[in-house]
Length: 578
Image: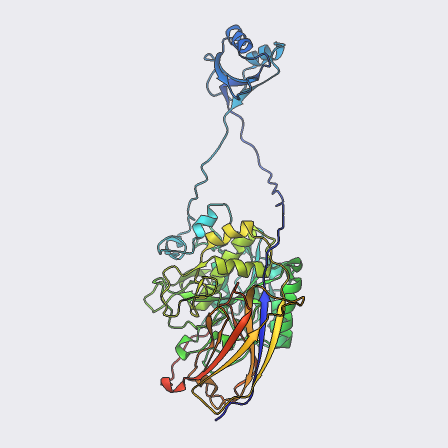
């Protein structure tokens, strides 16, 4: 069957850097200072210099230990007859020095309590099982380096959009934030999950513990950002509508910094679905008005349909430019069996692989702990916690700043895949892993000094193509100026979108790719053997992050190829993100 005319719309977006200075507010803490301990030495200031100090020393029985500074006015004196440590100052020497007209200033020295800023690992009993951040795997997520700098998520609010969270859990209650929580299934303020014999509503509680489980309380493990505030939105345990999703994604946008979501359309290898009109508006309002205009951060799990050859670019949530899509890798650096590959995945964190692989430690229902959390559901909250650490280091980062930082703080490391490629600006990128394993230490270090991006620009190019008689392959080329000479001229790329309309007898047989002028080829959708739909794609927007920072000017090539005959379409089951 011959494809119908194909309409293409390439949307390009830009990022450049400007400078911004900021001063972090000082934290004030009230505490009782320990009593001073006085030692047998004094600092004195004498303007007449060394000979006068020698006179003082002989007169009052001090030993002159010499100048403190090179200018010859401040000197260090010690008295052998004074106790080396005392809870009271020596009043006799104080009076003698005070009466001497040549002494401008003096102070009996006290002990100062100073400590090496080494970091002690959390004392929680299950921290030893948290292999992905306690150096049992190399590289791990580099969380300990950030904690050693005193960053633990303080002041950052994360909300888990899911089936509720157990707000009274002993590892969550102290960090629980009611302002970041709501129940949109029953429309009340309490996000406590509904308990059932099979405990199917445990998902949100597990995700919450990965982010903000309390540290050093001798229970379970520690969250990545264990001093962050954690909220929960109960919205998956009931009727789900566009209204419910939109309300969940727009709850308290000036209070919540990060929304973490590990759900989406069914990962069955045949569905092409995404957010409705209201939910798309919630995303738009979130990034333009949330966090005082800096933009809400939406962290999303990429999907668990790998066994069905699903592709996360057929999921309009992970495929959105407004979400930061997170994939998974195993402890051994392999692609998990459930993982979906796609061009919109930006970064990767750890999860499990086969049954014998170690999984993720977190909180569980009934005030319990588990070391059996898995899937991309477990990867996204780890990334949300790491992003919370970066926000504590620099609270002025915009939603686009954070995506730039994640691109730069993700490394191929030991991640194994056959599709690693070097893009036009020299970065390695993969459809399985995005830019690689997210490094919290690198993310925070760059966040401290990051200069904010300019406002986003968009340039759209319309391409209408009438295909020739059917061929195994078809390429549509278009010379692109990136709106040169106009106000929306783009010099450097962020997200690239292709809005595609076409008809085809068996949609899943098509592999669609896009190649940039700098030679980077990105697969917008690989073949999906279970997708037998004859509807084709109706204005579906594919997105790729693989061209990040490239120059958009030149010839872009859209490739379409029928590869359906390569695959045996056997059926099997895969876990959902929930």
